[in-house]
Image (tube, rainbow, N blue to C red; front, side, top):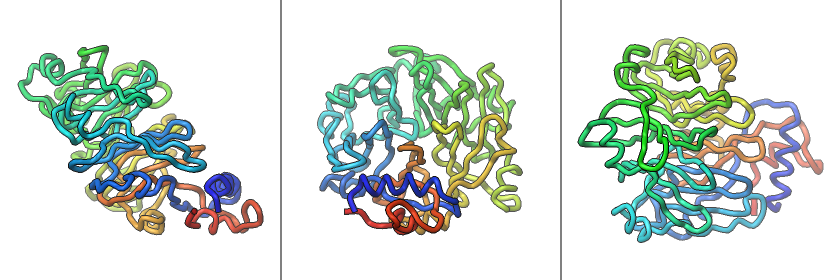
Length: 349
């Protein structure tokens, strides 16, 4: 069955009675790696019918694009390992969970060069938007550690990120310029912890969210600058049906459907909440069993999240695998008289 019919079938099935979620493959591992041998797909961004992908591993093409998601997929290089080495001094590029699009550029913090970069996805042109020295000068620290936890501000296109040497959250304000969002003292006073240990995301109102595995909560900074708990340990555990346990967080992502999705890595569940009432709307979106039943038979979906035609996409972090999509499990029959379960799980040619 061709990919276009397959995806139409998914959209039709999504309208039927939902009895759980199915995991289907959007971009295969073979397509993503293009014959190379990377360790894994690190992160992805989807825009229209194109997926932008960061591969991690030594001596491979680190930044590629796959066009034609709903048809014949074609992989092309955006930035090669040699090209990246010439600007960053390392063939390995680690675009973190917060890679996104900003003013027509792919924008990300690279954890190896500890800088914020912009890349033209059409020409491959690379710009060091905020270099390591500028961040060091602002924080007053001789070392800079940009970690996995960051996001593009959709309103301004600037990049928010957590810096691990100063334990603070910062945002770019222009070329080689940064500003403070929350320092370690403010984080400690608000949460009893300076840690940011899960992806970051902004909702439509401009509130910022992130995970904190040290004190087992989802924290937030409101548009008014107030630091507060969006979801407590007890609230998350209540939905998971657990007693006191150690929570862990992967990707955090605000989707066009108005929900914030996050991966609870301890129990391997994708969860979601409505920003208007996080505790009252918190629910499991995809269970561990549903992840394991998918084509990759893997449940560590902590890599990064995206959005394709109304469905959440994700990639795994500890297994060579492609990009996957979570779609509603079907009712009895789907489009063209084909059972939706068969449509959603059928291998596509």
